[in-house]
Length: 212
Image 1 (cartoon, rainbow, N blue to C red):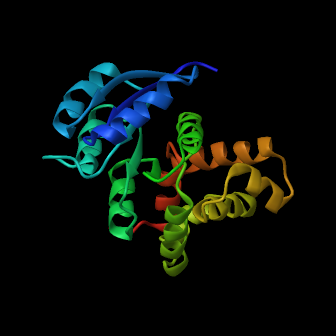
Image 2 (cartoon, one colour):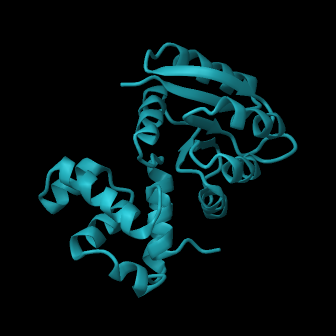
């Protein structure tokens, strides 16, 4: 697999040092740079063009969420993973609306963080289980945003998207629906094409609607 270029934006030294240490020990990852403020990151990220940015929310000055908005407007291909202590609905949804595609809590074990970086790079949307459950509650209480969008998808594609909205992984969806992992990925690619989106978060938002 191609080396994944990573940038870290985190103001706490002990957290930064921990991330730097185990990222540098993994041969699949290449650490391009670290930043302690969103202002510095917003300037340099469009130049560095990393594959994945690990982003804290509560930074001095501009927040990590606002930094994502600024950078996504210029370089939408960069993938952001929130790495934070915040797990309330407002913070989660605000980060996703800004353009984050992953959301991990800082208590996540290092091996899981590495797995999440790789999953995000490969097109997934890794999230801590507690965050996934919060999203499930949001989508379970919200009606379908529009039948028009859902009607674009086949019944099986709708099943796959509903499973993604519940926080299920590709393998779990394959087992639930009795299809192969490859078929799940194929369905997801088709869903993205039909909805004109680039990732799971955008697809779920377009059909089910993240409250604005």
